[in-house]
Image (cartoon, rainbow, N blue to C red; front, side, top):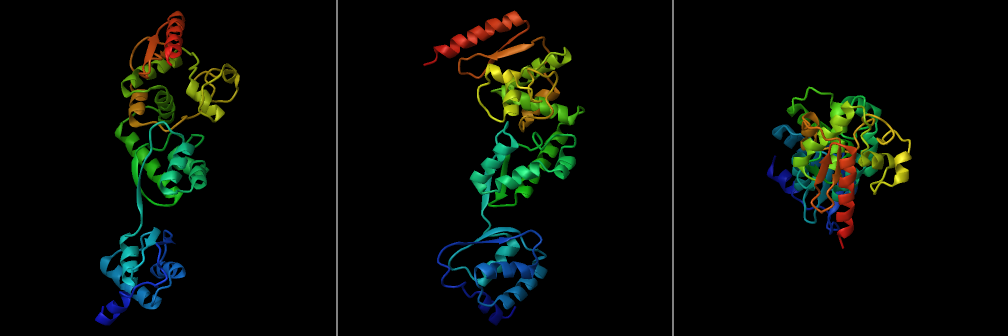
Length: 316
């Protein structure tokens, strides 16, 4: 480029740009359309020259327009815009940690709080038939098929793109397990284990309890499945146990229709390799450790429940 063109490109954006301004450039936007998007929000001194320069720079760098929300600062020049849309600079990135055991609706709320990702669009993606067919064939939704991890995402990125990152990461993690078992069954069991276990060391033992109950044709009687069916996380009441929804494992034998949350890798491993034992029951110790007491017989379980209630009532 000539010195004159470079001088023109380094002209500052309008003086009235005295506060940061956000501009959105969608995926698949052409070079010229990217300049037009900026120009509509922040008038460029010479948009035609900016377009020409952007084409030249794209050819030299072999880069295309980087989609996302851009924050243009007071004092930026046309050159800053050109460099920005090719490099992705000035797109705010956010590091978001998704804990294990959350539903996709809870994940959607975290993404909105942390990065202003569209909640409704994220939920809609998780419930879209074509998406489920691709990533979670046979499942009621994408519940259980999103990987809880820490992600570096773009502020206000498209919900479908963020959700796809999580679904693909879940596929990679599943592939790393070399699991011979049915994925849907494993994730469903893993999600229940994730909800019940307060620590990773107890996960294989809890998985073993549920596996033993399944093998004997016993109902799982897992409170977290009842909570999921009710659509709320609160203490399960006796009247809730009679609800006829398909996730009520006090009413229905076998696993529920699908996962009740998005489990982590440790819970998946526990579901794939449950501890071998004879336990059929467990209840929280009630001492604040999060650990459980396990038992083989109903009588032992009743005694352990009594201990739990005494420990719970002893707390101030």
